[in-house]
Image (cartoon, rainbow, N blue to C red; front, side, top):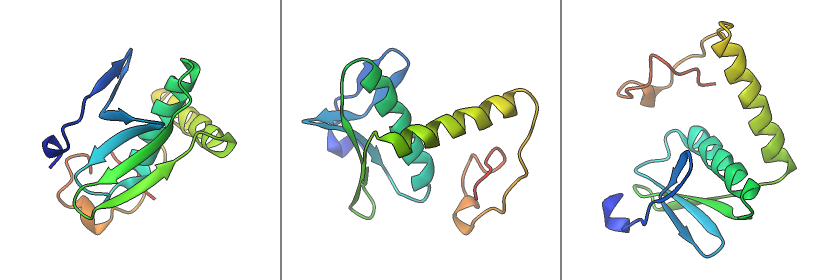
Length: 118
């Protein structure tokens, strides 16, 4: 499904973006079962590109359910990303967060042993 979209795959230093069309950075996903993780991925990409002078918006395209999610780089997104970065730093320092309850769709996910979903 991803290949059918013919993404251009743009590489900027440490990130690889599926596509850029007009004012949108686009991430194609097979499904939106982990939309929150994908949303944070896009917010991170938007931060990196804004720092490079590319003020884009983000778009997540769920190929299975034909849904689109628009993500904007704004103060709320900035705050949310900074909070996530702090949590990651705490984890890297050995302060492991309490594990959350796994969801039904986690059963077949290869990341289920490393994930702390809410």
